Image (cartoon, rainbow, N blue to C red; front, side, top):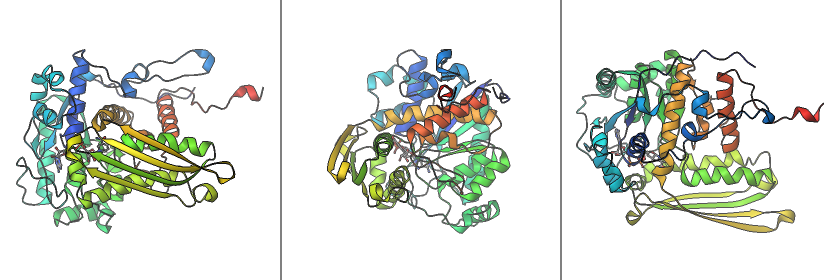
Length: 437
Ligand SMILES: NC(=O)c1ccc[n+]([C@@H]2O[C@H](COP(=O)([O-])OP(=O)(O)OC[C@H]3O[C@@H](n4cnc5c(N)ncnc54)[C@H](O)[C@@H]3O)[C@@H](O)[C@H]2O)c1
């Protein structure tokens, strides 16, 4: 047994602040309210349904994760956020069309109390959106100050003891890291000079970190994946995580690719295409926003199937990802994959996947888990990039000297071992002592 970590209790209310209150955010809020009301189950959530094995297999100890580590309870969550549109969470959920109206009507009064604060928004960074609920900010620095005020006011008005911010907003245009992102000083100077390398998502993130609020990034935007933000998080003793929720097609990829590699099967090509018709799809129809998503989606295979280690198997993979905006489909995305693989003596084979998925239904439990685990990490004295939460991200943030781990099963092992470590339990390595006795 290790020494258990000193974890502050999960007492009082935990505020969940979401820049972007569209399909994903409202599906989370509605889900939590439905679960609290006993009219739904938290399917897909590790914090609510998952168990964790402790000790030897023969010990028979597999408690629920939520009974093993001190997580905030669903009754203690208070939701808030910002959006470009003034719709409350009920109206926004109806517009998103993820959950049926009759289900939303049962929790309507709860959802109507969640009203978005005016957003920090600039159409130069998300071209396909135009809304009226926007701050009339004079400068980017003013916007930071306004968001910091919003955070303080939300915390006081709702009697929250702690907060977590999680970006559920749109995908911004593609931005490569710029030299102004290198240090805290250059970042602050750039915000003060209204530099174009500072998109709205960075304004929210910078404000959160200054207020000592952990920040998680559910979109592929650069946001906190730059040295200055990581340094600021460390300086403030705050947790960071990102980026891009791992749902749908990428979830399938990170399930299947490790299996192909485990069996030393080769991959010649992987063609992925999607149709979706929600607001996210509309935003991603803009080539500059799509580029941000494309980079996040393409990285996955390169790390799971490393060409430098297996040149014969993965040295020449043709990997293509397409997203097509198709309004009739709404949030009910369809993702097709054609995978050209080869086996013994190079003989070719094909795999076809047709995943009729519901994006926000897959994303909502990830948001809940990320919020609860990050709050746990924060109460445990952790700070900076939370790599043990890579399990939830398409494009996990890492320290600059490390490569990201994309394999879902390695990610899960790392997550559970972190929980065991926090509680002073032996880590499980799956190395059987019986082979040596
Ligand atoms: N649904 C999934 O499975 C999934 C998976 C991975 C990543 N994501 C990402 O999560 C994000 C949310 O997805 P969604 O389906 O809810 O999209 P959505 O379009 O329904 O919601 C996004 C909301 O963000 C708002 N917004 C945009 N810029 C803003 C700003 N600067 N401040 C405040 N609000 C702003 C928009 O008005 C919109 O209501 C997207 O970036 C998407 O790419 C979603």
